[in-house]
Length: 184
Length: 184
Image (tube, rainbow over all chains, first blue to last red; front, side, top):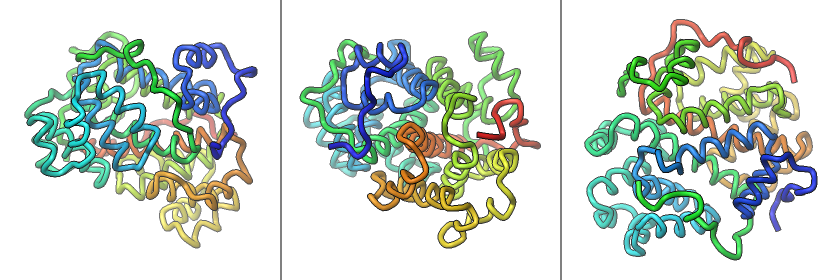
């Protein structure tokens, strides 16, 4: 049982009802408890990261998101984003490397390993070090970099929301292919 | 020290350029480095928390935001939100209590102290404990609690963005009365 009750679908505004139809997952049922404008803002920024025209390559985005999930012990986030990581083309060995971190990150390629180290640094230290920042800058332009910082922070928010409200794992993952492209 | 350059306004999509020209703060200038969908989503989520429709009392919201700023050593966030905290009616003594934490939180009243303890727990432990969750539930309904969790996480994101890009402090804080209300 979750710690906070899922929102009652009967009383919801139209945009919440539409999102729940599109993404009938427990995360959305819980997110529907947020006030209407916060809910709409959350879906807007999520779409910004997941859209086809987002400049951040999908694999690098999912490396950061999954790493936040593992560091946060956020079981629901990990459940959903392991499925999305596979959808965007990360292998099971690469997903294991994201979980293990450290030297295992070599399996993610140079850019992927740089993103993993940068994510660790952001989560733990707030201000990433000169070295980890320089490493991601050798692969990403400034727009991609700002999006990467924001998506990492966004999933720290999502992890706290999921774990503190106690969102339960769904029977099956979200149908990611209906929501976001496999390639950047 | 600024580590990432502000984007050149001339290169921005027209809608983003308009927002940057209307908001001269360095945080807006740097956020314009994000991709357009992310920038717009960020603005929508911020307005969700700051807008008139948010059910979370502004003083409680600012207690959580400032506490995240202090815990994160996010000087720009603290600079802007100390001004906003005063605008929504928190006293200098209460702002000092938010910074000090612990027993000093008594100056924030029972609800304010519960929010401070909950924000600490969320930041440090991801999943807030039964005790701190019960503390805020005595004062807030489920919509307010979900908004509180999300705004706490949002400012963890903002702190990382501000500190890692190295946004310089503005000469004066944002004119908050143009953007958000003082009373619940």
